Length: 191
Image (cartoon, rainbow, N blue to C red; front, side, top):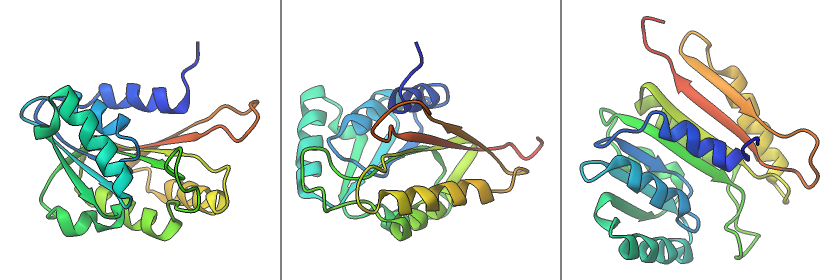
């Protein structure tokens, strides 16, 4: 059976993340990706997780503590556009994931925005290791969602093929705007 965009994003992350890696959850949400990443990086790795809503941080912290993985994660109550203020340029990032849209079961007027998402993408790509992956699961069936989806698609299409492989994964015969997955992988210099 074909995987949903979210499940396929996890498959793509599992393929490359190793214990000791530094990874980013750019949109913490309800903490599912943060928890998943914390398991993958092991005791010596680190997850940096961002969200602007306190509810997201509290829900995520509770999941991490209950799972005994809280020491592997740094939670930030701030937008993903501030990644450049948190991580020095010389900090290698193995992987990052975004779930664009709004926090499920919360205020649907608080959404990710094209300009802040673009800034976060720029900052992560500056730090992404060779064979590192940046995944974007774009939920776009809400006000403002199509604008952000358009920005992400244009951003991905403009990346130089000499430096990046970019995958677009989506179901095209489903109703209600199923999410679209984009995967950006940095090539090794010798490729």
